[in-house]
Image (tube, rainbow, N blue to C red; front, side, top):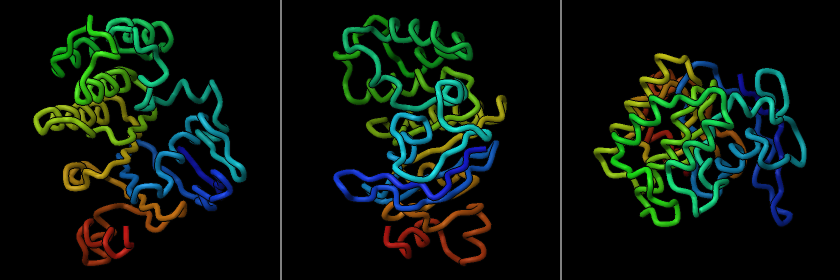
Length: 229
């Protein structure tokens, strides 16, 4: 389980995370939703240990973020840590050596499914190709936790369905815990179990999505609009 307790993070003396507390239920697909600059990306980076909180704590299976806990987390912007002169094949090989949970067969399948050329250098990729390459690297790990920050940005409609189906297949086969931060609400809604709505660095709504919709008598879009997100 991922737990966030009273997390606070300041940037330029302004709170981006403002005492937020939440729990991400294991073996669920959770939508992390909120307006731009609501704290979603900062929260994900804090969970992965890429940034440190100013106050509060984050626990992954009872332990604070560390290189050890990061072995159980696959985070979408993995590609941004690699060198632009690398080819897609170089990046795949690099992560294969780095992570014991790398699934080479799945990586090759995704390479073909996304119609990516392995010898193309990262700096030469189009926006859509870059988005697909980042997803390939994240989805090719059999990590316990999969954190995806705007995974559908720049992706065409056909590829979106491929990506979402791949997520569902992993979720079923590996019992992963998947967190998706996205603005593509209508696209991902049918796949979500849990909902986390973040506003101004604080938790506005949390719960099972279907139960929330039923108890409120609202659609997800209506819930979001009510929260002024």
